[in-house]
Length: 150
Image (tube, rainbow, N blue to C red; front, side, top):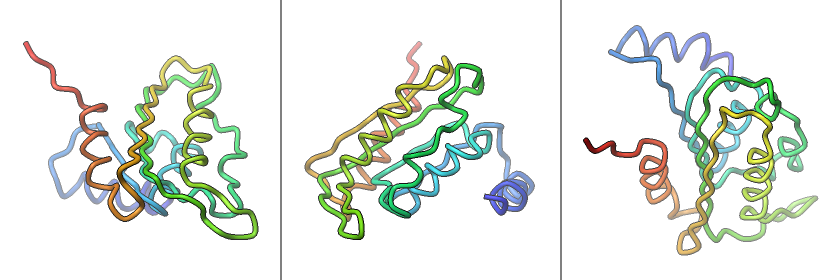
């Protein structure tokens, strides 16, 4: 996370014409990273697109955290998309079902007392871990960046 904050974001801002809006997209282990950033350093991004996150990592430890975004005093605007397909069981010391873990993540965030958090859940049963990314990103952009017609 320090690399993103101290090196990557300043590099991008220095090399390209940007605005203050920042979005992160992560799928699988990238979804785990996006979730960790949301829970530990939410100020780094405004919108989080979390697809099929590997929340089973470290025996699901991220799901046990009580991040600041759940507090009534959290005042930063955050839009969060969580997408998951029909992915099934991940074997290990403690087996996890990715769809269940994604639902637990959604329920956890949805329970926030903050008025500035918006979270969307998108279940794509026709997709699996290998096919979900393109459809989920498309859906996320539609939800997080709606077309405004005048």
